[in-house]
Image 1 (cartoon, helix red, strand yellow):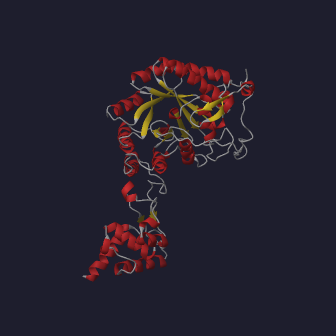
Image 2: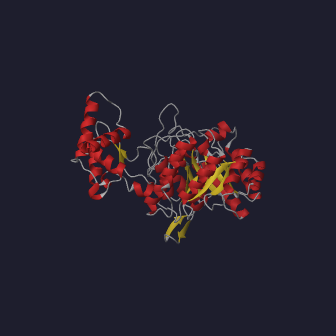
Image 3: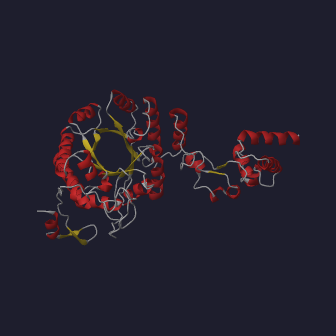
Length: 465
């Protein structure tokens, strides 16, 4: 019986949660097509991708418990030179500290290709930390399950590309062949006692009802027979996902998540979103995934990953706090430690404007903003960055900073509080400002350095005796 007949024969049943009659979920079957369905109405390669609307909306359904998972040591290494074992151990400990006692950053995944990969896993296992749980990512080969088992890991990611772009052009298969191949690998995972985490690569260009739903339904049936869970990672590989309500599949984040729960029977706790930032939607898509029922979002530290990068861990830490109203034990001050570690030990400096971590994320140069900070830092600071990130708001001094900027700089630099603070009318501020104005009047374009300002302050104090 094909999908159309299933739809016609649908029945209704009472949903005891909503007390409403709902259409029974029907069984979708793989629609094996002769030619790949490439959704050219949305993805004409010589044009900018289009967002189509069908105005079908899904209900919110955020799980009671939502988590972050980490891919820093897997996807995060696909765009840069590999981390050393020492760096991985240090960063793993920082991730654990950031995660907190409740394990909000629940898991992190590793490659298992080489002896170095195995050494990295063992070094982190020896730390004895409860969170994040160590998982792996392997090739879809039976012998790799033996490696995972030997490493003492109970869950592994498996690549199961699901769009016709991959099935036809990369694998050289048709849909039924691809599904049979994937299911044989999933069977091997269950046979080895390993929880499979199926990575549905390129899901935002896949035929959702013609391949994704029947494939995932088959995984769920195998999981029930094995009496083991199976996790489903929804990979927005090219960043095509769209968070808006009413967007048509395959680009609808909410539609994908609702459909997998409703028509493939996947509990939200076993769904995980993995997004990329090609269209600047990585964070909004990840938050949308949580809101519509995805139990976890997969991230990397500072979003470092292939091409435009992944969802940043630190972004979702604060997204979690905004949605749940609590950090739930996470230690966000570690984010500043991590940024410093990347610069000093990894040799990677974050772009200065990177939220929460870049050198300038809470630094102003505008005099009008500095004036606001001088009166009340809440006016121009997103939250108490001193408390949450060990980084109070700062100013950098240039031709636009004005007396207010200089006053804020002096107060922050010298830790002046209460009646000891200087203001725009303070003589020391006027002295420094007069010198700065002369510098820029004479053609200077560079910012004023801290050493220079300190020198002028000392010069003023000496003159005052």
